[in-house]
Image (cartoon, rainbow, N blue to C red; front, side, top):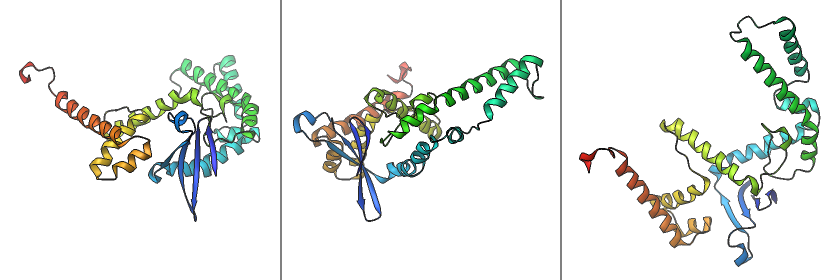
Length: 247
């Protein structure tokens, strides 16, 4: 069976007894006009564990949450009476200047209340749109509408490719910052080049990897060499590059 992820991207689930694997099928691959065939990219299990959580827990919960306004607010950590409480706090502040005992900045407190109030109003106003989107949503992935509630249930299509690429790059930056103390950024396509090198270092089947990513063996050899050469050049150049005595 397959789930539609975007106009050019599909996820296939291959069932093996009680176990399944994921694969990406790109309909409009760069060689599609020549071969007339969509390209499949089987995904390793280590990269797809979070897909189980998304497909089995988060996705159905999110779609179900749009059925009622109360569930919609609860999904985002709010309650139906929260808007009234915020309105009352703003009114008290306006009429009598009532502040929490430990409030050190009245202006910041007021701005925070107004931000929460407007955000919750926006979330409530988007509920019917989100409900309508959920009723026709058949995509594997879709926007949850975090900062733009009206986009809930909409697919990540080609127009948002750069956005997704940036999300991956930022995630890599956060991970490397936590691991190494410095952020290093890498776009999704860069992983293909690194993979070409790593497969060779591990002694794995080079031809199989090239087929997986849709390259010829010759192209992958070039990518592997490029990554290695670039790394060696950088390592040799990083330290004391400004020191004339080292030249």
